[in-house]
Amino acid sequence: MDYGGLKRTELFTFFRLSEITRSRPSNEGIVRVILKPGGFQEFIDIEVRIDQSSLVRGASLLMDRKWVGDMTNVNPFAKDITKTFISVLIPPEDTQIVRDVVNAIWNLRGTKDKVYYLTQPPDEEESDDPEIVKAQRVYLGEEAKFEMIMPSSELIIENSRIGAKELLLLTVNSF
Image 1 (tube, one colour):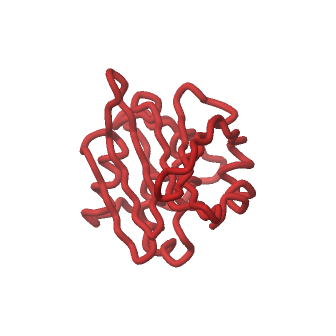
Image 2 (spheres, rainbow, N blue to C red):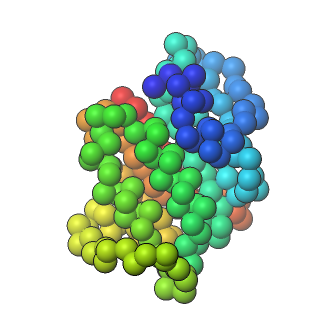
Image 3 (cartoon, rainbow, N blue to C red):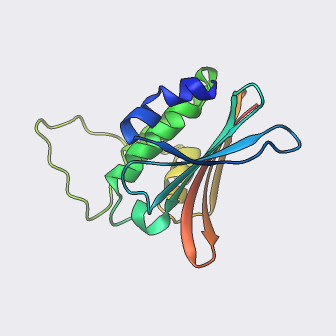
C-alpha cells in the first residue's frame, strides 16, 4: 500500500491522524513519518516507514501500557485502534492468517469490565491455540513478546519500556 492509500483508510479517517514530523530519508531511502490521533494523544504514537516510491514498508503503534489495560480492565479504545491498525497495515494476502489474532484481541474483556448488550451475542469460545493465547497475554502485559511471520509481512506485539514509561508496541513490517 502506498502512503496516499493509507491516508484514505479508516486508520486515518476515523482516528483523525495528523502528521507531526517527517524525517529525512535514511541511507536506505526510508522516511519515518510520526502521526498522532485526534484523541488520546498523550497515550498513542504512530510511526509509518515509507520508501522512496511512497510505499509503506512498516508501521509501529505505541500505546501507554496503563492506558491499554490488563487482565482486570481492557480499554475498548485501545482495542479499537489496535484492530484497525493491524487490519489496515497487514497486506491483503496475509489477512486470513492474522484474522484470529485480531479477533482475539478485539474480544478481550477484563475480569472487571462491564459489557451491556442490546441483544445477547452468541457465546464466544476462548481459543486454545497457543499462539492466539500468547498474543492475548502479551497484549494484556503478562508476557513480553509475540511474533507472527507470514508470507508477505510480520506482526510483532511486545511490551517495552522507554525510561520509566511502560509501552505496548505493535509493529507491522512488509517484505
